[in-house]
Amino acid sequence: MSSAQATRKMGSLKAQKRFGMAWRLAVAFLAIVFSLFPVVLIFSTSINPVSEVTVTKLIPDNATLNNYRRMLGDPQFPFPLWVWNSIKVSGITSLLVVALTSLAAFSFSRFRFRLRQPLLRTVLLVQVFPNILAVTALFLILLNLGRIYPQLGLNTHAGLILVYLGGAMGFNTWLMKGFFDTIPRELDEAAYIDGASSWYTFTRVIFPLVRPILAVIFILTFIGTYGDYLLARVLLTDKSQYTVAVGLSLFIGEQYSQRWNLFAAGALMAALPTLILFYLIQNQLQSGLTVGAVKG
Image (cartoon, rainbow, N blue to C red; front, side, top):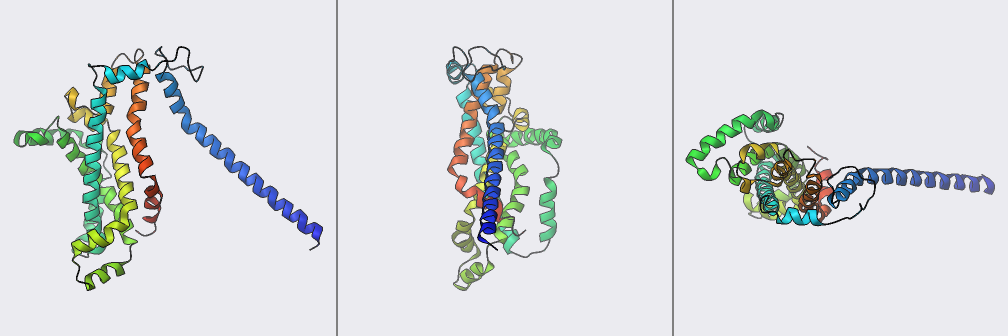
């Protein structure tokens, strides 16, 4: 190959690389615009003194933060309390789900016992049925349970957490089991040879290695319960017990057109806890979502 041909080939390769880079940047730019447009629209509406959805300017005329002040200071609608209720319910649920599913996944991954496969299939089968099919049954269960243990009955956060736990165990157990399967069994055997018990092996040897999947389970559970409306709306009846999703929906009520700007301000503030949580544990999410898919 002559030097002129080599130069032309090199130039062609550089042109292909530049075209590929430009194409990827264009796709990334469109994805960013597509993702941020709803947020920009809601933010623009939240600082608009007039309750309207139509946005002609990014910063509307007479932009104000009064909508945020009203949401934080209206005594008839305790928005900060609703946000705290959601954080409390979602945080406790996520911690309990992580603890229980890690124990279940470790047992299914490391131990061989009778009915192991049928139990795994049953755990996954439970996830097939949506929560809406069980709303009536869950309502009646908590109604009767509250007569015996009022702390776990209707209109209690403990009862709502109990319901959330039942719905989050199946898929998360399977997801975490796939991650446990990627950890070499030689680590367990070495710990057993040194005289460690199964509990010591789990807490001191295996548990530190599964932090990425724990972060994934925690954030998925937190987001799913934080934004839940159906179960919280049915099981909570007192305004002081509402989560933020239920509180905001009842806040706008039949005055949707008059309170759209207030609702937009509340929605943006309600999204902050999940954004902060995602930012804090983002380093663990990528490896947690990919490594567990290597081996099932």
